[in-house]
Length: 238
Image 1 (cartoon, rainbow, N blue to C red):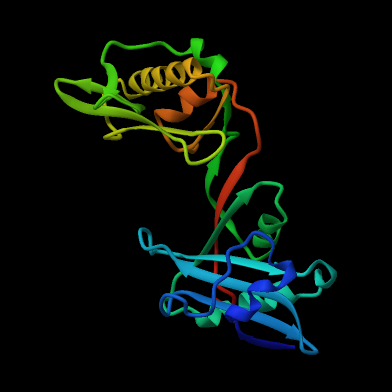
Image 2: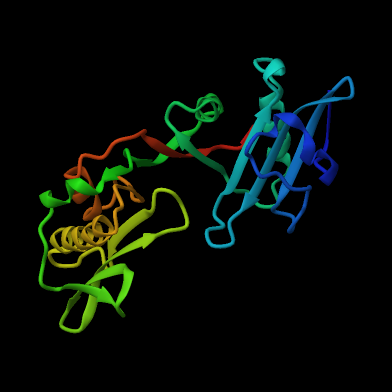
């Protein structure tokens, strides 16, 4: 068994699937990737990186070819990546609750740090939400609706059309915003009204259970789909 740096030549390994691997140190010392070989044959690979926005943990992804699973190769790659960390940070990953990757993370000692409920919402469910006179379009852009109180934006809903279905997210500008849930409700209602008028039937919501304003509104819209988890994993031996 041999662990070596991942190279551009490994990008064609058939078991990588949809994970976007890159060569070892593609950006800096915080971006590492490795391949595990058995008898000269690559059987597993792992990649870790830090976000340029939130650099407090290493994102990690590990994949093992189907015929070589359940032999400890994934754990070996994780142990190796743990030694490559340029900073003493924990790892993190995310996925749907029934994903094999999350089962593997749990076996490594993962703890859940965020939960995202089912995210698919039918636009037809919007009548359960109430409009509000403070809600208006932001700069007349149809993708954004905001609640404006005393000339200040205090709540906002945004729709992103770079995925199918479109993604809708909403939040107050301050956690302690007065009537935050009510204003988020109205922002979401207006966004769904605009989308429904354009023939959009489904929207994917982006939020989490710790959001004090968005979650109650979300729950009223009869969301469907799978639960999603964000987890932190302690480094091997750490």
